[in-house]
Image (cartoon, rainbow, N blue to C red; front, side, top):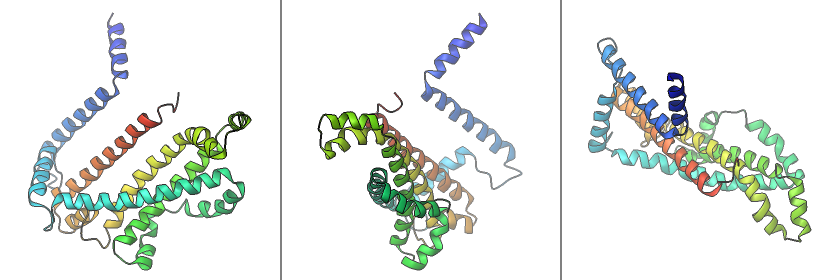
Length: 266
């Protein structure tokens, strides 16, 4: 009887992933609070969730470094958004060309094979040398990060379209544009979404890394400045905000996928 009830409870939780996620988050917050209370006398640099919330309130009302908190957040989002969108657009176009044409794919394959193992943050000194320390250098860095993964996944998606499906479509005499719009694009779109998810996560991480060097606003600047002057609560706030915003961006893209790529995996 007890085993049956446990199994039913497990099945109920499995059917409600949001509930499981909420419960695990609450458990983490409880453990965090207990740990912070037990170690507050030993580690003055450890910040509990209540102190963190209070610090968020202070930064939201007073700002950081003479700049409102929302400006730091908006600055990072602007840099990441412009670089990500530009890289995604160019990456999709290049990926489609690579997927359709073997000559183009063969010509670009050595380039992608060379730059793929290089971490995006390794380009920071080079980009600063080429484009200076302004906004453009940060956007270029994010563009390169986004472009690489979107292009590769798009090319893989176009190549993965079943040839039998294309042959059947051509027997009906449809044009090349309609073939791409009605057959190739729906089949390749799940691959494109995967590339966009990876590129979005990396773009958000890279913009923060780029702001650690030569920036006067942004969450990366906030973290570096807080660490330099040992403002530990502000440091925690910056890290938590990066994680929360990254989570919201990923959830937004997931909602887009469920709405417009609902056939994926079915």
